[in-house]
Length: 277
Length: 270
Image (tube, rainbow over the protein chains, first blue to last red):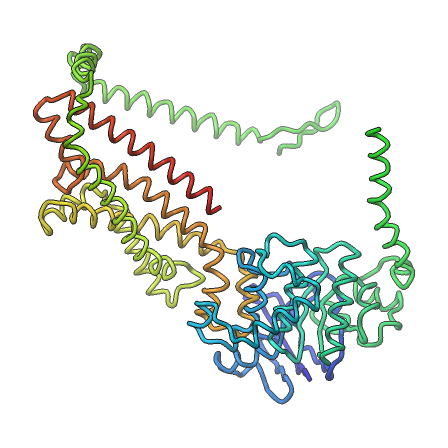
């Protein structure tokens, strides 16, 4: 599905973000990309759809080589790759429906998008997707009226309405609470399975990565240092990716810790309730 | 060295001794300039005239009351003209300012040379006062409302375009990135990613400039470019002080209403 060959990115500041990455993502595989901040995770997925221009190397989407495409051909190729962002990146002042339909801009001409005259099938598909993620009633709300989890669902719909073959997901849960994070990750996972999509998911949370992916790739200082199944993440591997730390609690057992987190607000409520009475 | 080691432990100060001295020196220079400038102005002022300024002001003040209400009959049309000059001028300015702003903003300009041209348009529009634009345009179009309208329009292009292009440069770029990632064209990215973000600024700037233009258009008549300024000029020249006060009152009320309207509109948009 996606193949990176010797992908290198050097920023104008001289920072070498990617040091010749080779990576292959087969059809309908959900792959988590973990690594510390600044490891080049974001740069990597942005180099795939060329929101960031790679300095060197090749990117193959199926048989199509992306780095040498003209602007016009790149636009066409981008339609095949849906992207989901960390802070949702919805256009805040547009409605939910407009945000979802903006995923079809690659297929629609300028004047049709000016007058918001999207084809009937697109509108129907938008409603189907909103219904699928449970936001049917929100279609006419403005994006900035929604909660974080709801916004990310809209972001997911916007990516899916492109009818992509590949999802590029950049820190989808970074600004969400633990429960919503799980729901969003589960949703992305389910949708990938339903549609047979491949996905690269950048994620900070090692626990979530283990729970919701078939394969984990660890990136450190622009190079891949781990590539394997989620259950083989050992403290040694995490030390190699992130550096020295006590990793025992992070692996597997973390579930209880998260649950404790969630019960905290309830306890706090009870306490304030008592204080009030 | 804001951190100073003393015998009884570390001490912290906001500035180092050197910085303190520099600031003190700055104040010294500033005070000296003010004293010197006051001296210069004082030398060039004929204090004899200033001595009775209070009496003169009182004199004109008493001649101004009561405002000549009946003069209002002749003021409705000039007031209407003034409002039209301001409104039409603002509309013209906005129509031209939008493309200029997109050409001037670093993130939307098609080419650096076009950006430089757009910035030049903005600066030249802003550097000339609308009264001076009117003065020149009266020669070109002859006296009347048209010259005033175009003067207001020309003056406002720079103001509107400058505020707009700054807003365009300050948008949240990830929203545009998200649109770009869908395979949208450059024009569509502007339409879906940038326009919604700057629309409130656009409306706010338009209303704000309209508000300013109502005040500016009240004086354009002084150079024959239409509006209530013509009557004001005439009344002052004929020493008809009760008419002058009536006109000032009308201007005051007009500006008050325009402020109220613009506040309402801005509130509704944002």
